[in-house]
Figure 1 (cartoon, helix red, strand yellow):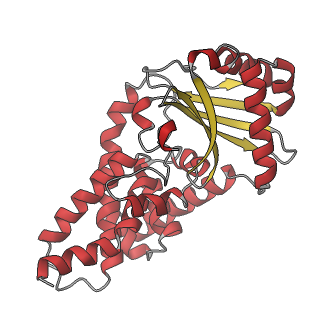
Figure 2: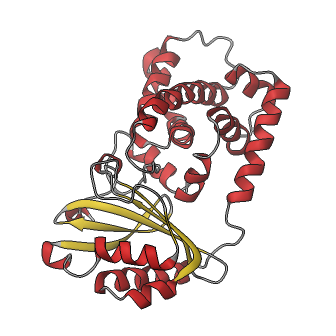
Figure 3: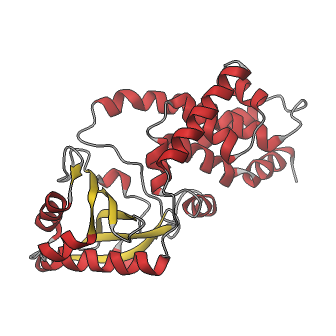
Length: 299
């Protein structure tokens, strides 16, 4: 094996971890893969004699580059039409690196990504480096260009915020599948009463069309408003237009996909509360964010 081949093999050993780190920071598969490619360029040109822990070294580079990418995204997001949701990820469609993407898809839930979106860029990076990869605070401080005490405060605030917004219970997967089926059936048939009965009183729907697909420009609150909007979008008449809905696993959890012919139209996620009612709906419709989901003919 040549030195270049050895270098590439060493990098590939950690690629899945690096894609996961970048994806947690930027919330986009395409951006994460771009960041990891840039990390490879940095790694291939680096002086490596003093690198004692290759994995930690590469994670630090990747996170720093992802943080820069996240800051660059800020201007784009200020011009974004409607709510911005992270890009869902499927392990079943070919990517530039399918093994890395598959590993990430099984480990990063949409709910966690949405919570991470509420953190500042520095808090998000500190949380990923500390809580996910358990890097020492001194190394995190060097990565982020902050003092160790400042990084400890960043990580503490981020951890408290994430824990406060995470679900405090685990929903049985069979129950989640049952409720998802009932939700889709009521939307498909236009049964307003049935859909309202499935939703918690404080339910919220967030839809992301990016100005390219019909979506609510603000989060919708309450069972009645959510049900009427969902039925108008997904209800009776869609089947005649060639629409189909299929269950799928995205980000390691139950989800559903609407297909317009063979193409992916939208992907949805439901969160349930302690009573088994739907408390949160995320609906991603921006076609730029649906590229990892297989077409109907591939599913």
